Length: 469
Ligand code: AMP
Ligand code: ZN
Image (tube, rainbow, N blue to C red; front, side, top):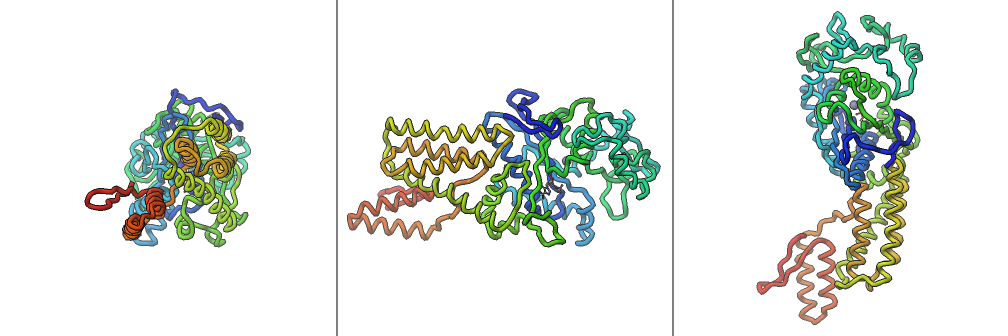
């Protein structure tokens, strides 16, 4: 399995620190609003990375935080006249609902920044002790950027170039910094803002220290993969490396993965320009599985354009896969038990080739675009090579292969349409009438139709009973 590592700018064979186990941290959203479809991209992409690794037998410890203390949350709380927590708790709940709709698995741990303040104070104290950080007169603590010799190694930036670009910062009220490159680890409270005690002043942590601390607490000082959107490379991830490596004296993360951005109609997503969609907006028009399928139709390191036409195309594409699965389920319900014929055995071997293609694509830095192309090849193959004459084990195997491949992508192939109780009762009545009229073909058809919708019929002495599978 190869992963493109932002740190080395090349694809590298993935070798976990501990055999069979993966420690993975994905920077999560700041919770001040409903998540937008751009935020959904890293969620879907890295959930798919996790699913593929689990499919390969790796045990993934997946940690993704919620940033629940931030200027934007405080601003929103002030606008609504409520505590910050009301805002963050509300949008964490909403985010979890969207994740469920997108079939993004809950992380092993979803830490909250506000619950990890002690760890942050602890790491900042270590950094001060090691002379990598210093408190200024007003209680702000800064990281001494130049003290970390490898600063810039992730974003491939040169310290002196950064210095030039940052000169103006010194005139913007941060003259207490030793160097314009220094960044904030702890900042003093402002009126009306949430604050915690610390040895330097009552205040709150800077954003970067949160992830260094939560990653260390839940995964350890050295982890396998750290991931997020490409906007996080600099300064967020660069600063995380500086903090963690200086504090722990160890390599922080071995592989750094970054997804490219999602644009709308080829423009940067922006609320003020009116081209902005939340995941919730999309869910009013589409099943969120379509959004997931759409995101995976491109490689995660390619910019992805969102448009109404492309969503329609994604809807049709997903529908084709679901229809093939539906057809196989119908054949499965009808097929009589039997053995695989020689021809079917050969045909299954041929079908396995699509799984090989799928895995080859995923092994190559999670090329989901090619992996989905392999799913389509299997769909086409199943549509032409499975029919009413097929044996049950043959249909079972094709359906299993299709659902396994879809599962890795987090795509659910069962149609969610729930059949209503009254419709079930009506069909059962129709079946009874058909049997009375000795129309056994129709009676069986109804039993199979219900079975394909997950309804199991039982003929008992007291009449027909049914249950949901
Ligand atoms: P934020 O809440 O802004 O910290 O973003 C949470 C995650 O979403 C980060 O990993 C960002 O890099 C990612 N992200 C934000 N906007 C986009 C976008 N338009 N396309 C892809 N990823 C994005
Ligand atoms: Zn982070």
